[in-house]
Length: 545
Image 1: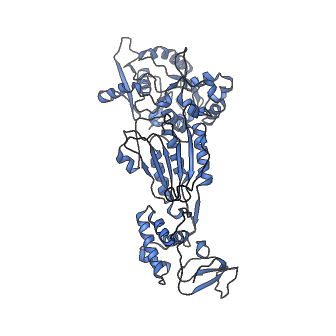
Image 2 (image 1 turned 90 degrees about the vertical axis):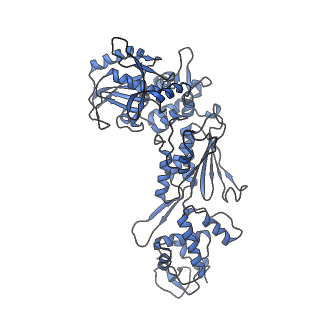
Image 3 (image 1 turned 180 degrees about the horizontal axis):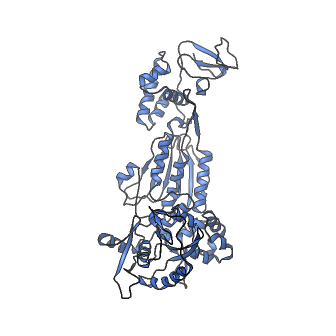
């Protein structure tokens, strides 16, 4: 059978974590079947693994060109595994495939998580006498015998099959879209794509480990609907994303809202459509050109990669048995992404508050995560939160926050807007008080205090130049320019009580004012005409004294 993933992705450990891949230079059935048992037990709920026989390992990397196996070796291996499979209790048979790599043949054993775990296997399947059976699990990139508490927990896992990996008698082959399946196989460069048009759909799904059960009663797994059904809400109501805008803030103006049409479809389609919507309608870029450097400073109100991780996280880890949509709320100061249910109880409250890395062994939808990773929509296990925080930090934005309740019934991610691009549409009944309130919601404490001090300096009306203000506040002139621009966008009246200098488009002093001239305060703001366009304007727009 062909693999559901491209062989090069396995050899280079792309899209599949290293602890799910084992390289073997030659055929060593005793050790290989211990690893098969460990992958089938899937103690960490990572989705099983792959064993590549005929590939030599060097410092954890596949040595190229591969060592390969002779044709007679391949024949003997395929005959031997039929007997060795009976040495696993309960019975388990892995999927196998012969792959051509670097002009040589290798033998690939795909070991999905077993439906009847825990499994045990003879310590040496080649022993002529009955050898003792043992349980094995993976620890990092190694296979070890399960003992003590690990063995106790392994035995308790029999009834803890993740929801997406369970068979569902309500799903029929007609509910799936062959177009979506073919598109997936083509994108991941699986060899199954070549034979898919001429192969019965049930056979292709069986090879993808989605069509399971005894011959007399076959079942499709829930993940098949999540990935390849155009209307998964038929089986899992409210499999959708709902987006609502509050231009004036959800608290300030709860009745002023704009609701986007619900986004529905297969999970990958929902993710892409949601990200396209946010990219088109929400994400904005700001370009700032300092006078003392050649490079421009670029930042976004929300970095795309952070939103991507948050959206994927919400649809990957949500509980599809809960009849609630993923909700995205867009406010002037932040985007909130709410999903149900919450994180596993194995994640401590301290980890949630820290918002650094949330790691658990119990994945609600491990197969779904595996599919999303093969489509490059997910980076891997426990990397989503660090990626969100890293992208926000790189963008100069405050860190995201995470929230749940004691019952872990929901998970809320709040991604703050960049301080310099906070939406200006919140109406203010009292302009000055409104500006102060807007400054107070700035997340970074140092920046918030600096803005308050700067407004105090500006209100004094003294003839402070930008360098003088930078000196008083112990920051650079570039920082002062950015803060002044931010205050100006909030509506803060920045005036110079002394004289104004009229500067024409060629930056020469002129005593006349017409529609081709620009006005800028001098020497209050020592800013070139090419920078911070809000600090000079056509005379018809002037509000200076």
